[in-house]
Amino acid sequence: MSSSVRRSSRTGRSPSRRQSGAATSNNSASSSKTNAARGRVLRFDIGTQVLAEWEGSDKYYPATIVDNRGRYTVKFDGSNTTQRLLASQVILSKTPQGRSRTPPRQRQSSRTPTRSRSRSRSRSPARGSVGRNTKRKATKSIAKELEAVAAATPVSTKAPTESEVKKETTSATTKPDPVAASPSPVTNAPATPVSYGWADAFSLCITFFIMPGIPFLVNWIPRSDGDQFNWRLRWPSRWPTCQQLWDWQAFYMVLVWVSFQAGLALLPFGKVVEGLPLRDGTRLKYRINGFFAFLVSVAGFIWMCCYQKFAVEMVADKLLQLGTATAVLTFALCVLIFIKAKLEGTTSPSGSWFFDFFMGSELNPRIGDLDLKFFFICRPGLIGWIIIDFCLLSVHLKENDMTLSTPMILITAFQFCYVADALWWEENALVGIDTVNLGFGYVTAFACNVWVPFSYTLQNQYLIKNGPTNLSWYCYGGIVALNALGYVMYRSANNTKAQLRRDPNCIEVKDLEMMETSSGNKLIISGLWGMCHHPNYLGDLLMALSWCLLCGCNYSLPYYYFGSLLLILIDREREDWNRCHRKYGDDWLQYCQIVPWRLFPGFY
Image 1 (cartoon, rainbow, N blue to C red):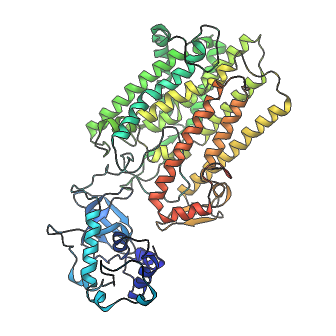
Image 2: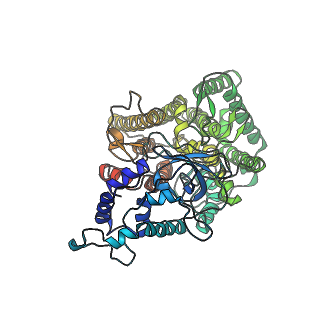
Image 3: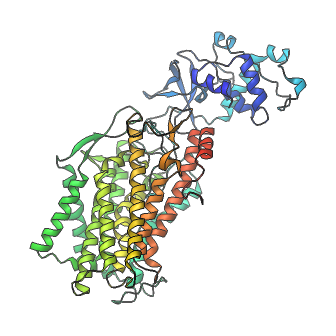
């Protein structure tokens, strides 16, 4: 889009004839008739009936112009929802006969010269000016082209509800896109893909078995040969019995743990903050006391071990049963949330109950003051991960004559600091994609409750009786340095992103070099965010690699965490790239020229 058209998009006015002729001359070789019609935006009066693009989707709905100063403010028919849109996001609606309903005064003021359909798009020097016949038929040509735009635009005959927003979804275990200030408000319905077909249904069917299956498999493989753990990567020689999978005591332990964490989350400790605005302008409130809950949980565990003689070996022996019980409770939770959303009428617009169940029917399901998605992302799984680590550390101490190995000490310390840091900066989770865009469904719930505590502790299980014994001090020093480098990148990048999204003018980010997009958002192109698109992903991967290196190189199974995280983040990065391309258009391609590396600088 030429500069003249961009200026007209910002102001809502048509470009002058000279500007329009220049735009046609510069872009005619690469623009289609539909795109040309979109570029010549008309000035709509207040009260004009139009078709307006629902922000974040590719669908147009009947709406009425209520304000035309700078950008168009439209009110969707049959709804109280209003949005401020660019001029290129608003087109004329059609009458039943297919004519555009443009007021006479508006038509007279919008005679922008265009070419007839029969003329070639490539212009020779001899055709440098617009012909008289084209000038006489300008209004008629514009009307025809706008009809072509409307005919080519997906239009819904129903008025949009507050839950009808169609955006893209992403994997259950991931993190935000390249930083953009002033994010678009969201409704209480999750973002859903623009289209949903058989390929999506097939992938969700696979996900149904992968989410609980992978943690079970990586925990069962070393146990499949009996009491002597065999960490060689292979297909299990036998499968567990029902007694090895299910235990009512484990079920009660998980139930008590989740209830205990919910009680801590509801205590009046910690500040109350507001999340990002919903599409109706309201903000949900959240109590930030995750670090308090973490300290109370760790102190309570130590008290039970020292004064109540809690058998920590029981947790290590019942990891499979605890995982099964957690999976059953998580599935029941997903069913209840799905039914709750159906009864309250807050389902997402995917049109498929199957998709709604997996990806979430509701963006922020709540029971009283407890936000279920925020709670399960930050509390039971993360804190449970550290409690399991402490149990495995105690077993390692008893198995090795009350001595601790250096790798076991380091990996427990690394993971303890990782979880403590996440809960210290718990407020930053409110601006992440998991909280802002993803609904709370099967995928997110299983990722947080089952994957995190029962597959991320695999290295600790391995180090109970195994681990490298011949590493020198400089090898350990290199591993510690690698973990520290990853942490600094991860935390610094996430803090910058969170600060920018909350307040683009805050002192922490005002000195950063930024690129402003046509939508008014800003992309950071300096510092860590100028090094690659996702420095926070890169920092997370460096920390994961340092944890796995503590297990040596004798077996590949302990490297499961790094491998799975790498695949997840690459997949998420590709989804983020496509979403940002749809959102920012040519501005995103310009950003990619400035910051060419997507994840690994110099490589990818």
